Image (cartoon, rainbow, N blue to C red; front, top):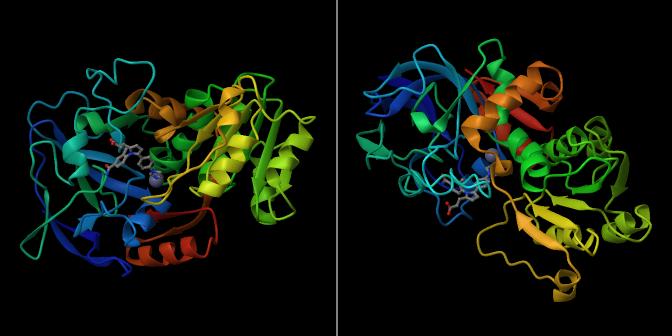
Length: 368
Ligand code: 022
Ligand code: ZN
């Protein structure tokens, strides 16, 4: 079938809007009609020319929501009409990682996904008689996508897809970092470095976990204002001096029980690490640094019992947790609507990237 899609053709150039051919779902796959997709920094990074693993041409996008339109042979996990969120970390339920409590990084289709193809080694996408790569197994910058059934979370049908699509990446990444990677305890102290989309969600994850003190750190007064709506009890403007010292001062010199980094900047990662307390403090790196970046730490901070770890998709077992987060949103426990700054049609997707490059707004959503 033919569909409209935004195609990544060349680094540092706008996405090309054109008709793309999409093949029907093969065995174990489903065709999804997308209702909406978020536009994430990782898409922008892929377009920047700085990502050595970027494949072209490709249909980008990994924060979508839609409705199953058809299923391939042998599909049992989803059916036509189901509302779904595509997952860039699938959950097969059978691999060593799915069976482990320690990680959410399903191994089932990892190799082919990284190569921009479906598990059987071929692409469902074609343009100008050439193969087009899938992206993160999701390719949501298009009217339709084909994804493996193990990469679809089935969600309740009354949830607005143009909001809950954000649970497909940033919401789960931030909230999950607090709940499922760090496992924040009630009455604990937390600090979140970086109050963009993911940082705001880490803040609300700390709030949901029952933390008593939640310190937000950012350079922007506007973001620190938003941070208070997402659970911050204290704010630190990182431009007013050493933010690590400010966090230590706010915690009687000790540092916080849990710190989080949500910028991708290695200097900020070190600040977050040095802000957690000796004797069991935990720092969780959420931000994705550029290829080749290195992080230095002073070993003394480790031998005094600080933990340094990272998270992908908030440590969430995807098909299990995404529907649960949708429930929490529908019950009013989880804020999502306030994260949407702009909604636009696919034809305007390149303006969404312009806003993102200017750090203007929190999240743009493309509505099909
Ligand atoms: C997306 N991310 C952040 C914001 N939006 C994000 C976060 C983490 C990863 C990727 C994107 C990530 C961490 C660990 C991995 N990835 C797995 C690496 C591995 O398997 O060796 C990751 C994932 C998917 C892809 C690339 C990297 C891909 O499909 N191309 C989960
Ligand atoms: Zn993302």
